Image (cartoon, rainbow, N blue to C red; front, side, top):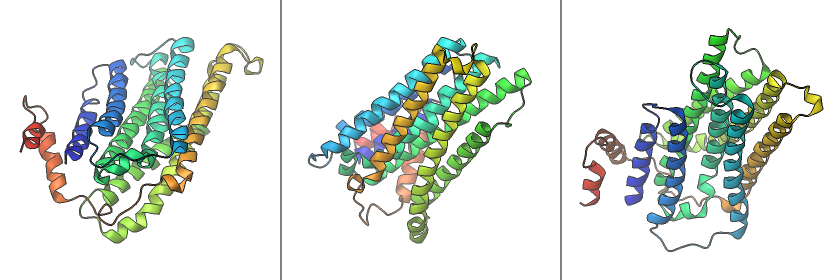
Amino acid sequence: MKADFLCVIFFVTSLQTIFPLKSFLPLTTRLGLTFYSCHYIACFSFVTLPAMSPPVLFWVGYVPCLCSGLLCLLAVSFWSARWHGGFSWDGSALQFNWHPVLMVAGLVVLYGNAVVLFRVPFTWRQKKLTWKLVHGSLMLLALLLSVLGLCAVFDNHRSSNIPDMYSLHSWVGICTVIMFAFQWLLGLAGFLLPCSPPRFRSNLKPVHVWMGKAILILSLTSCISGINEQLFFTLGKPYNSLPAEAKFANSLGLLIVAFVLVVFGILSNDDWQRPETHHESAPVSMGDILLIILLSINTNRKRPFCFEMTKM
């Protein structure tokens, strides 16, 4: 039961990290803390069954997944700060610098970690509802970051009188975000709403899995084409002379490719798939929905409602 409270609180506080937006550097910091605190608190504080012995090979793949994702975030941030002047939100080129950072953070790193969440062995020891809500929350954060990344580039183009949506990169990118939003809404309707018919859920699952992989491939395509496009537009020296920025950006692209390959490697192993039970495949009860609403209403009280409930 405590694990359910954790995931609901995580869902509510995740949204509160985004609204209102006081500044953008604290935003990324808060999102990172929310993501990693969710992983570690849920892992160590709410274990309800005896400890399992997870496959060693899984951790051989999962640790590089986490490390390469973090390196992607650091590398894309360093690229924008070192060679393009840093960050701002004033319609200038400094606002555009948020675009690659937010898209890599949302569509690649956060999305990829959310995709493999159900493969992590310690999640099997808890109710699947807990991790469904965590999975959905991480996906929502990834979607919001990608939308914010689109806002950054559109605002910059409007301020600089640059036309929108003319390159292949922009077409693939906007299709990826639209597909992602549609996928999230389908997942919410099919796997979390109590009114979802069982037949609809069973038919939706393979489509949901396929769309999840397709979105990750499209995200990779968007990032690689975006890095290449940025280099062609902004390099002070010819690309074929391979200046320092080109070497670094090419390495960033290879790092993103490596991260996606590790994610697909984890997904390809059926032995790491969470065991399904009939009870876990049931939709969320109306009581769970009411609990989420009550927690959302009472998040601003000095004595949070969830603490009162946990003492009952």
